[in-house]
Structures are given as structure tokens and as C-alpha cells.
Image 1 (cartoon, rainbow, N blue to C red):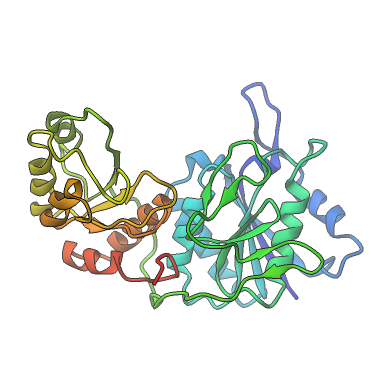
Image 2 (image 1 turned 30 degrees about the vertical axis):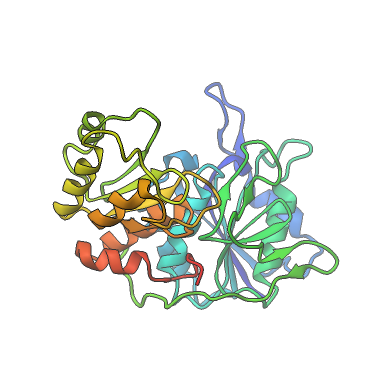
Length: 330
């Protein structure tokens, strides 16, 4: 099988510089040595960003560039691997899942906690695992391979900045676990898809955390000027300080102004049920949108995706609770 690899940057290919780790390793030579003698030795092509980035600098423009590169090589390969930094990999994998529902071929993102030139680096097992996943014939979506686990791309989040098993899916099982042979979980729904989406670009989506003691004045100041959309990370299953004077009014006024407001949970594992508790009743009454069991990364990427499609607030509210690419549980 033919595989195309896109290198965007990240720790995997970094070297020490006077200013800290930065991209600069000989990735082509390393891949050649890694694949010599394997059945993929002559079956892998490589492209790279002109400007390699630390993924902390990634923006929706980079999501668009990755999507464009994958489509440009779509007919040339059977599977695709994106080498990406770990800090925002789960944002990118979520974004790609919405943009590539018509792609028809497996795409796996991976990276490493240590650069490839460091003894004991996790770069080799992660890259070889990603290659095995895309050539397995069992994957049909965007996924992340990391720490011996294959994870759904829009269900994953980074859970550790140092552990080799640095990513996990809090609400669904792994797609596969490595071994001899790999252990695959039964296929789950992949959503309704989105035909011919407009490319990603930046949109003003504000992510806010509630905290004990937050005031209406502080929340109002954070929302002035109004963004295009808001992700409000609330407590538990979607609760807020309902007895805080004026707080509910600020939220209600924001939604009434035409700004979609999505309520997510600060818990990594949660299903947002607005109004299940009295402390969340005001959010439900105001017309807030439930994030259900989506990760914060999937919520953010999905909002940007929908804004890029030019949708009005009512349409965004509909699509946020509609499963597009397997990001929501039934």
C-alpha cells in the first residue's frame, strides 16, 4: 500500500537550539532508515510545510493547509499520516474529521513527546504505529495514534505533557490497541458527513471557564466586544453559579444578540444536560446549546467549521447537536 506523510512540525523533528527546541531534524533520512527492509520501503512519499511550526502556533489556516495537502495527494496514496506537534494535535484531528468526511481514505495524526534524535524517544513506535493503522484496511476515518493506542480523531484529548501514553478518549473506547495482533473495537457511527465544505479560516470563537466567584461584570467585560460564538465551560453536566446576581442575564443577552453559546463541561468525561439541575436551568431557558459529550477540542473545531460554512446562529445550533463525523454519541 502507498502512504503519504505530511510533516507540519512538532517535537518529533525538533533539535536543540539556543532558544530551545525547534524544527530542524533530518526527517527524510530518519524515515528512510526506519523503513529500510520493510514492505513500505518504496511506498512512502513525504511532503512538509514550508514553514515548520510548533503546534502551539497552529491556527485554522494550518488546518486548511493540511486539508489542501491531503486532497492534493488523495489519488496518489491509500493512507495518510500527518506528523504534528502534540500540544494542539487534538484540535487539528477534530478539525480534519469535519473537513474530510468525503475523503474516503484513512488519515492518522501522530507525533512524539521526545524528539527522534533522543535515546528512548517515542517517535519510532508512534510513526510505525500510525503507518500500520493506515495500511490495516480497517480504518476509514481521521484518527490519532499515540502511546500504542489508535484513537478517534474527534474524541481525543491530550492528557499528559510527559507520559508516552499522552492522549486518550474520555467518552469512547480506543479504536485499536497494539499487540500481536492488534485488538480492534467494533466500528461505531461516523456521522452524516458534510459534502464539499468551505476551507478553514480564522473566526472569533471565545472559550471561557466559569469559576467559583465569577461576577456578571467580569463575564460581561470578557464578552465585550461580542465574539462570533462562545464556548462556556461550565460545571458538571452544564451548571453555573445561578445565584450570582446578573450572571444569567449576561448569558441570556449574549444569546439574544445572535451569538451561538455552547455549554461544555469542565469534566473531561461528561454529558452536558442543560436544566438537569436548577443551577443549569437559566442556561437552558436562554437557548444555550449543549455540547453533549464532545471534547472541548471538538466543540471549538466544530464551531469554527460551521462558521466557515457561513451558517446563521439557528443553523449552528442545529448542527452543533447533529453528529457530523462521529464526534457525538447517539
